[in-house]
Image (cartoon, rainbow, N blue to C red; front, side, top):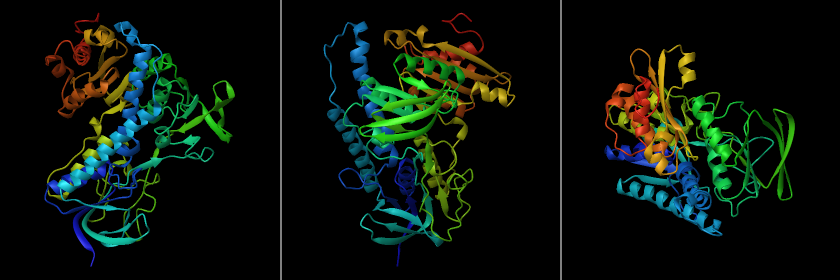
Length: 474
């Protein structure tokens, strides 16, 4: 007879492991099936985020930022470093150590919460059974009262620029270069392309980013995107918009690119090519015959607002369903579904999910852009405030960027907040809280913010909505 569980989670990434831990906290018998194997050949829970995504990329971003500041910006502080160098092997080793620390941490949490972890690829069968195929090919079947599909996403591969793991790479490959490429090409000016392009540019690579869309960071507010593009260009990133790649051919130790730009056909030769044109839901081979679970035209599991598939006891969360492919969105969906299964209320507000790009300056936003308000005929008012007028930002030598707040013209309810500048990944949380509780710009304007802090820019932007910012001519 198959071993039975109250909840079986297929996938141990951000969405999956949060679901498993919360379900176990609610006294449910939980199993989690995950196929990820680390460099040491052992199970590595945490999915893309912990292994080749959020955490390792931030480790390299921080290492490269330290080197960039040491060689470019510390002189203003009276700090000089002659002939500074960086050991790429040590930097990558540090990153790998952080990965091991956090994937091991999830394993410890599973053990502490008595979650059964199965190493292998999970496939949902009929009647809520899950087939597990181990790395050695062996199989076993377990049964669950509830199944949560949390299989995540995978990089999109271009048919004419297939990953070879050496010259043409995905995000995982770009996190593991053993040397700084002299010339790095990046296809896609999204989060992954900008962040990893920034890493290698700071370390000395000549980076060219080719973006098919005519607008830079089209999902962000136009003013924020314009400022971010200016600052990134000043750092030496070459970003070509409205440019479409037509071929990528490996010739010896080089990759020869052909693409159409604003001024016609162009050629580019690079040493490494990072293809970062987006990700697709990883659902191939996840559903067996007769499950009743449906996929949409993009291969995502079809769910309702509560992440229910429409099949009794079967749920899906994270990157493999609708909505933004963000780890923190997956976190909250996993927790919400576990609580619903346990008979408690669970909900994720898709309108207040923050977005962050960890470049320098950082870019963050939550809620509607000004363009969206116009398109939806929503009456609105805005207030913005520059970091150049914030004492803490200037003292940190980080004056670039601003905070922009959008509020309803009649109710003053905050509709969106858009930030570009130092540490805005942290500042956006205050805005999320205000929006989640239906706060107004007046609410933030009335809150005392410590001085001197970067958060004063949020405060002043709220004041500016009604043209009463103190440190800015309104």
